[in-house]
Length: 287
Image (cartoon, rainbow, N blue to C red; front, side):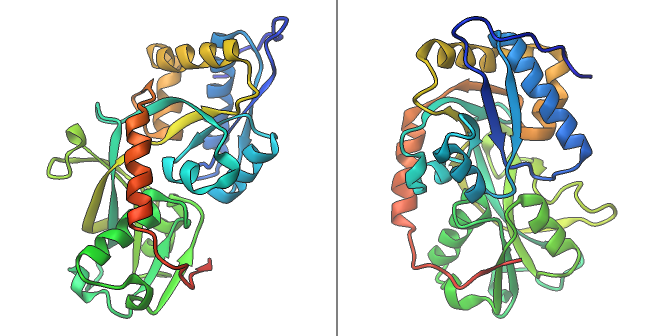
C-alpha cells in the first residue's frame, strides 16, 4: 500500500533517503517507496527513495549531496572520509538489541565443516567497508591464527549480502560472510535472521564461525539538513514502528523491529575495532 504524500510545509526541505538493499527487486522497491512515503507523512515533508548498488556508491551519493539521509553501516561511516560530517540520528534494533553478528557460512551440503578446512577455498565478501560481510569475519580468522590474505584461492566482492548468499548457494563460491541476528543479541541463542536465509529457494546455508557483536546499522543525515528537520526525523523514526503499515517495510528493508536513539559509544567502540583489525588491502576482485 502506498501512502499519499503531501507537499512540504514552508521551510521543510525535500529529502532523499538512500540505502543499499540486500536484494533489489520489485518488492524491495515497493517497500522502500512505502517507507519513504510514511516517513514523509510523519515529518510533514517529501522524502524520495534512492537505491544504491553498493556501499561505496551510497557513500559517494551522500558525500556529493545527492542523498541527504541514509541507512549506513557504522564501518562505512568511519572508513569513508566523505561521510565524516554526517550526523547519526538513530540505531537499528533487532531482537531487542542494537547489536548483531557476522557469520562465515557455507552451503548446507558443503563438505567444509570447520574453519580449518578453508585453505584454498573461494571466498565471497560484501564490500571492504562491510562489518559483517568482511571486516569482522577476517579479524576472527586472524585471531584463530589464519592469514585471510593467503588462506583463500580467490576472493570476490559482491556489494550486497543477497549476492554473497547467491554466490555461495549457487556454487560460485565456497564460503561467504554476512550478517546474523540472534535472540537477545547473543550468538549462543537461536538465530532469527541472516543474510543467507530465504535467498535461494530450496537452498540453505550452514554457519562455520560467528564474530561480533557489532554495533547495528544507523540512519544518519548530512549536517546541512536543518536541525528542526533532523529532530523531526529522529522522533519520527523512533515512532514509525508503531504504525502497522510500517512493519513489513521495516522487516524487509532493514531487518529491524524499530529504531532507537543513536549511542555514540557504539561508534567509538567500532572505530577502535576497525583500527585494531586493519590489514593491507586484499587482492579481491568484484564479482
